Length: 256
Image (cartoon, rainbow, N blue to C red; front, side, top):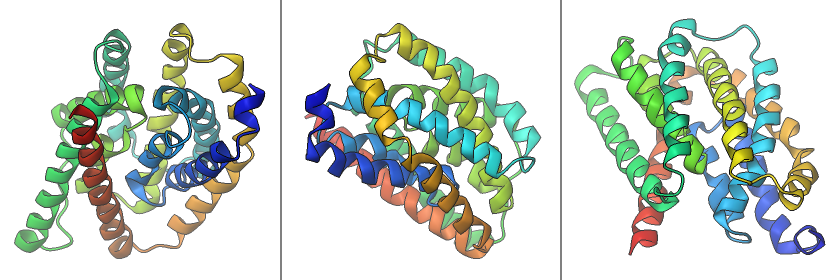
């Protein structure tokens, strides 16, 4: 325990990771919060990084839900949450079979196609085109988001594949995402505990980093409240594109 908490390289990787994840949790930067585990994995094993981050994510979720209290899209949550529960269950059942590299490769490919499709629609329909809600699509992407969130805390891109084309108000989208991931991360605590990921070393590291969680989350929400939709959506799609390329790169490199 003392070795990890006295290692300057751990803090050099973990502090930026927590800040970036917190900004994303606040709604700023979309899927850029995926960098949390990869950044921390520069100093510690990826599985340990995911375990340390999960309690921090739960605290960020509490702050994020409080920040966006009462601002959400009920239909999107009702349509996506059952799938998320199923996805978490599938992640638990296949935890020993599915590697993080495989998940990153799949999510990266899906997210990249999603961004390319958005670019195509901008040229065909214009920047104000919005998709209609679809329960089947919501259930599918909710399942994918729950699964990838369980395996590698990479639930953001699948969630946004469904949510972004509907073009909710940025504040409503942020509030909806806050509730969705607060619920999924709370559910993940049970299987993570059952898999033995919450030992004293990991929990102590989580508590040491927790003061950064509310500050970075509130900062992200502050930025979203001051960002117009015509800026918010292109910026978010751009971050998803960067995420997609990085996930593809990591997935291919890990499987080779």
